[in-house]
Length: 445
Image (cartoon, rainbow, N blue to C red; front, side, top):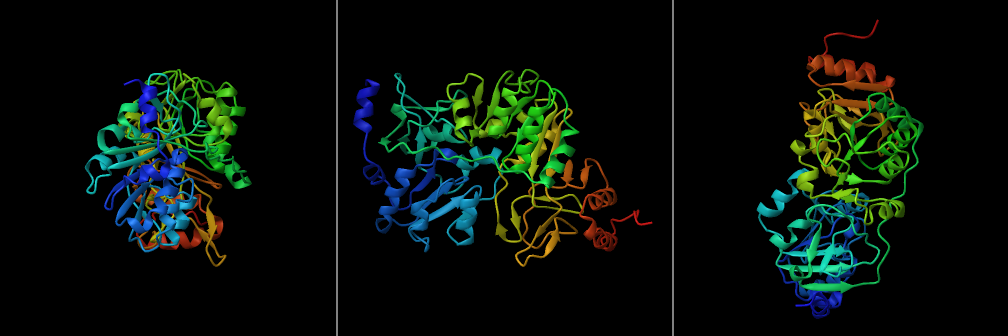
């Protein structure tokens, strides 16, 4: 059938599309900037007609109406693979549940986990003349849609860029329903202003960066500061293999720091699985042949990451214990974010020839009562999740310095971590290390 004719046959309203959803269905929402806003609102309107419908999400960039419509979880259950600020608030309110998983395993989980997802609702770029819809800013697990999902609903958004890459398209023959909404602007994430502490941490990291490194950055003030320092530097031939493409990469490219020409794989290309940032970023990725938007089982596979030499991974974390275990996702039983791609890239950097993985944090934080507490701790609170196990922890960075734990014994780790803790907490950390029998040398005179 002619693509335009087929398009007309499949074009429906959001309310008509979600009428095909049944009780017991397992829905996958589009992720990041590809969330199905119209279908979600229509699904919420059907709440009283449906029971036990699971909604899988990842890094929510909007408040899902279906989820907040049902605090009882009788009609809709939200399983979230990474808590954004929205997801964290929903979790604190008892409206969502976290799915512990590393991002490189997302494909395997989608294929093999009980209660297989059978409905996909995702935002796409408008159809081209050959009948193909581009996934735009989010590839992630979307290439699985034709393989796994029985009902495929797409929302067309003319603001979604067309992004080059691997398997990042759907043909109209693989789609059941097409929605044309009001083309809302894509989710914007502005750069966060950095603090003096962020600046100190970023400068420690910069001292470790050399020409030809293959870079992964996350989102936040400190990674943004690293990106701006790289843009201002004379470092040459940076490569990009990252989970998330952010504005900082555009700044570095425009400054001539990024060429991608020293990469061992995807030479000359920006490799990423989703892009999330400002209009500047979305304009950069639109129809840009330098972009290689790839599935998450490729971008985040530690063994693929490690095929590049000198992988340079910069991640934030919440706490580090004296053994070098890193928690980046929870405080006790409270889920704050998720594993995401942190394990993937820290391990990938660990395996890479010349690779370096950095877990970065301010040395202190104030608790809910306003009391200053150390983020370097003897041991985590009960139920705190370990995101990076101690045997692959590489660099830990605070505003007091940078330490490399790779291959270090427990007493060495304790000493080095205490040396970059806030000075007000070092004496107590030494006492605790002595009790734990991991203190060999005291730096007290």
